[in-house]
Length: 113
Image 1: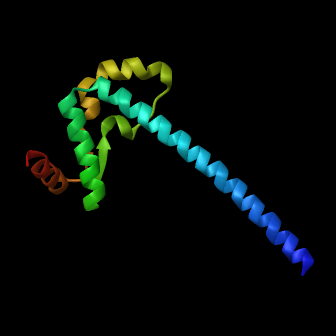
Image 2: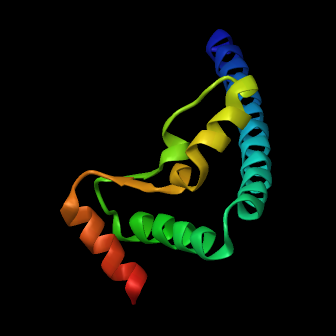
Image 3: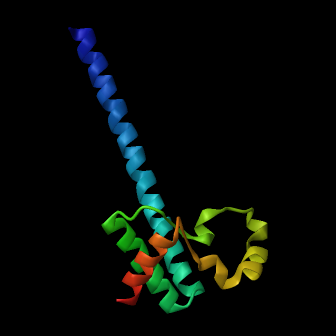
């Protein structure tokens, strides 16, 4: 019984340590997300930024399937290519990618309200 108690105590301690580590990682990711969102709001025009924020909230709230997000969120490149990608892609990097016309129509209808 004593050995089991020690093992349970050790497992509990390990789980708490893991939980603390995950909480710290989550806080760091949330801080990075806030920072990147602030940067994004400075890069794209205000109306486009507001539309993108609305669409993300709407898709999450209504559980819309087939919304993939802006082009810029769908790929990664090496940091030394960022400027080239931004220059070539321009505003097209913020075009929204969806599965089909049905999803596009639903989202456009909501944006126009």
